[in-house]
View 1 (cartoon, one colour):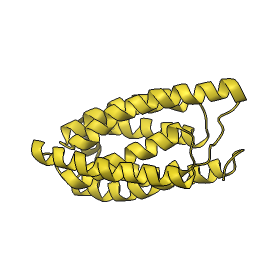
View 2 (cartoon, rainbow, N blue to C red):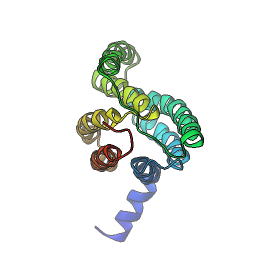
View 3 (cartoon, helix red, strand yellow):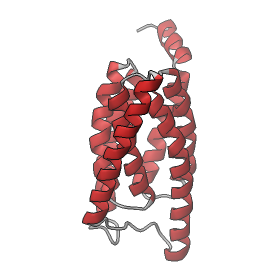
View 4 (cartoon, rainbow, N blue to C red):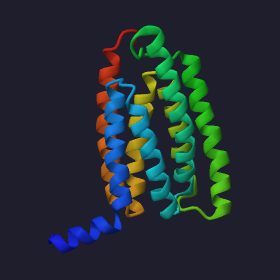
Length: 196
């Protein structure tokens, strides 16, 4: 690759690159259970909202809107916990919580898939399913449940294929990295006080 080709690629994909870097930093900070992760993740949410809207992955774009809400909630919830306990503590997720989350993800996938077909989104059912389960994983993460990492690993592995199909190679590479970060997060959170 020559420098002009690299410069051209960066000028065409600067938004995706900015979202990628910001997302990696935010998730890495989350694996470390550092409160500073939330403003970084918030910036990544907005950057990827624009990337996915441009790619007509409307479920993913909508997901970023929900991510903004979850990010703000998670920031507040973690901050409150740090104030009360002095650190971000991991909270176990019981079987009922697992089942409720997985059922909510399935219902959300069907409803969102129906809507995405009607508005002409790319890959409407797959994207809707991944979006729905990403919301579940985000909720679990905001609530400090270690189970969020298991779900992120599964969802992100499937996202890699979707993004390769949509020619979002940098984002596919990002999601491969997010799988690695989710494994690290799982490992780190298992070591935390209160982890199961």
